[in-house]
Image 1 (tube, rainbow, N blue to C red):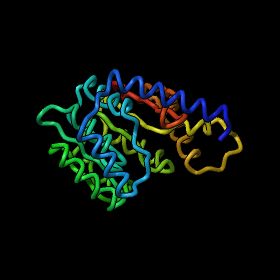
Image 2 (tube, rainbow, N blue to C red; image 1 turned 120 degrees about the vertical axis):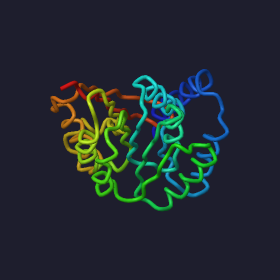
Image 3 (cartoon, one colour; image 1 turned 120 degrees about the horizontal axis):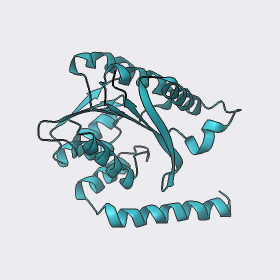
Length: 226
């Protein structure tokens, strides 16, 4: 890493720390979830604390009662989403890795998130089983990037007019504008963004972000009234 990029990353992280200090106070359950994820050797690819709170605020803003999360990891973002729900709300979160699901279930139980169901299995196979439980009010996509186009297709099938779809990691440190990339993850999110942009059933945009997690971004799409 060059001196300039190191200093830039340090600045981004310092600003994230500033934001967290103002808006995201320490939380025992969330801190423990991250600690247990590290102890279990899970990759440190969870959303940042301020992004987790953003998810909670978005879920509250749309009045979500049923949330679908594609990609659980250790359940950090899941806890944030669950906290947005009314007493009778539910989060269904899909995880392909049994070890990740085990850590997530323990973290969710400790956080008192009894309104979360962790479904184990490849999302491409699990999503078709959810049709009888649809529609969902919010869908959060944060799983393998190669699968994003498929996950968008199923998000639409499991949505209703007004459903908010949020997808993380869609900028890939600017990789989406590299015409020569052969990175399957970049190609997956690029195709996802193209599908969302071309779909007349949604109104959408993408926002690039910088912070402790580096340079990335998310796509937001609202399902239109028919």
